[in-house]
Image (tube, rainbow, N blue to C red; front, side, top):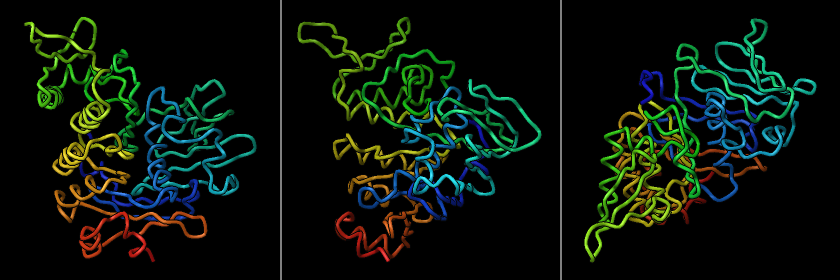
Length: 345
């Protein structure tokens, strides 16, 4: 687990300027922060600002796995690189600025200059990270005294190789969870959760230590058990295992999920929502289009711990409407995704 002081690990206020469709927004945050809205209104862009921070502090991270982009200029609002990007997380400031042919990335705390080979050197002249080419394989060591947050962006991809060797086993690696099998092997809480889920289908979780592999066993009518590869499980089950592992293996972290219920049967959307609502050690930023998932989150989470945000466009810029308790209650009385326009200014 990521032992960071819980008081300092929570985002209370997030301000974003000139990042993609986010010209200038500021939102107050709680434990569970949900973003809903019509397609192409900038919900994913908001999550990607946090994904950018997640990437910055991920060793060997590739930026394009955290933020949708082909070229760095696409990060800027209207592709206008002359207007710097600013991301303020509580009192901590991140920025991206175009300087001649380079991009300067401002971070809290220590200063690094990144050369064209992706190597960085500490400098005392500027609080910047620079790279001569497109930023795609650069990361900076995070030090708790300069930025006391673990911001982790997770994406479920059904063809991920979960057997990859990794030094980490205490929590799921971002963004695709390539060390999933190792976490299941070494984390008792995660292993028990996965075993219980598998047992609902009359199967048994089997861990092949020698091959660093996870299998499921099914009793045969002919006697004994037949072993099936993890890959043969349905996308729904693999997705629930993935996001459950992300939640249960992290502690005092900010977890970023985009449509974690996307591939789920409604029952398992409810199961995942309940797990998020019951978790008392992490903060969540979630985009969803699923009424079952949304309703369960709202019903199971203490109202003082949840923020429901509607994203909408105004003059091609993303705006965020934060709902109060009365508006949330009104939203639940009908299909929430057909009544959004009634709550938008």
